[in-house]
Length: 501
Image (tube, rainbow, N blue to C red; front, side):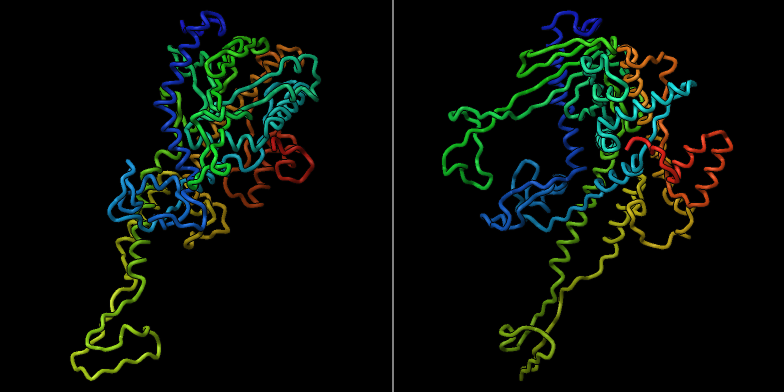
């Protein structure tokens, strides 16, 4: 049996905290560094190295560095991974963040339009109440923006966890019109989340810990060692040491029937929960399923080696162009040649029969280099499943682009991958909705038996569809018994609620 105890908060509190502390240490030392690299390659943030427009010392090559530079060789950046300067110095650095726009395109295809959550109960009145409450709960927590955040985290890290918080005091006695204010659906950033997985089934959670460091609106003592120094070499505050803001480490441990809050290792508060029984209110979503592993498959990890190679070759090409872009001349036996520039209408004369002017340099063609870069981009397309066309870049004629079928064929890889991921994300949305309905039933606000809690996620249209095809699909739905109002709403031809926005 886990040290968390059979009922979450039962058992030895000290042993439970020691287990959580051990899991947090493992997370910080083994998992967190990898997750931070994945986010850095996706976001590629700028790091200031000095104030913009200034020059300091021998470092005269820009005021910022980008995160993806860590994947470039020392001959390009001028600095090795251990911080040792390379003899060649810093060269031209070119970073093209292919990972960022590809992940953004995948998220757009996943949650680019509102989604609907439909109840599967056969009772019409109850179905309307369930769908209305769930829509308000999701929109109160962020709506489609929340779902886009969920997809972004999942695509970068490979998984994302959703925490369902319930304000039981506000829930009890609330009406259906205001009950959504008692719920909050929070995505847990994987760098903060530490799952406490069952020792018998990796798909079952015995508990969950949220661990992070925060800054307080208080200052350290003036004699403290941790002081804020000016990034550009001066002490803030007129040469005096400026005390830093206090920082504290917060850990929230969530179990089957309650929670505990620790600050700097000391428990400061705790509480129990009744409306969800012994269920840990955390839903796990894998971006793409990975067997026998808690984390799923992300989109960034597989692209990192190719991104490094692309940036390296682009930097090499920029350096070559810089060296060869200027035409140079070697003059022999001509007096005063170095005293005037080379340009149209300039004439030199000499009586020396052995004099000569030889031109060299210029940007010479390099077909093998161009082909190599093109092959890297093609490899990025294949691995990610996102062709340039998905981002609106049309390089050549791709059949009849006015045909939806032609576009579908071109985007087939991205469409297929999105449909696969809709299974995992859709299941997560359904499980969160099930927890909300369970809490409503336990609190007596909306009686929904377990057999009536089934819901289904109705996604927007995936891929390009013309007007004629949309009308054909709408007629087919009406023929199958789908309510006409719903079909008209999907076409945007009435005032029906489009879903979660």
